[in-house]
Image: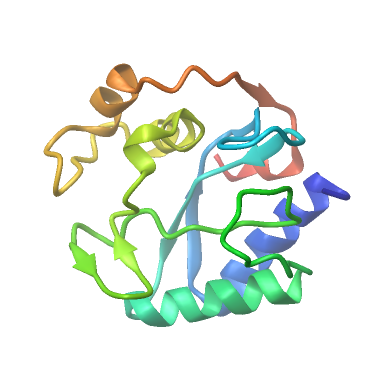
Length: 156
């Protein structure tokens, strides 16, 4: 929604300021909405070096989303200004009421796996036991995913 490039760029800046150092970033991809009929999304995966614990990272993510104007946390899939997910935290496995790491659906979503493969193709999912490239090749998601030109592509 809105100025998608600017929202993405602002999110990356805020992550760098409040979570840690952004050390790598995938290409930016435009993808179909997933789970509902909506507007196309921009997706990018970042690698961030942080001293924060996973729950602290989640708290900061929620603060960033709020700061950038997200106000739609009603449990439904719908268009939104920004959506930041914690995909992995090193190779830890964490299941809590408010946070599951690795993200429980990342292996089902090509719009996550393709940009993740850009920066960590050989990373092994600590539960499934396959690399990101293997997960991508086995992914049943047929959604369209197209690399686009964006200011944040300079992270690579």
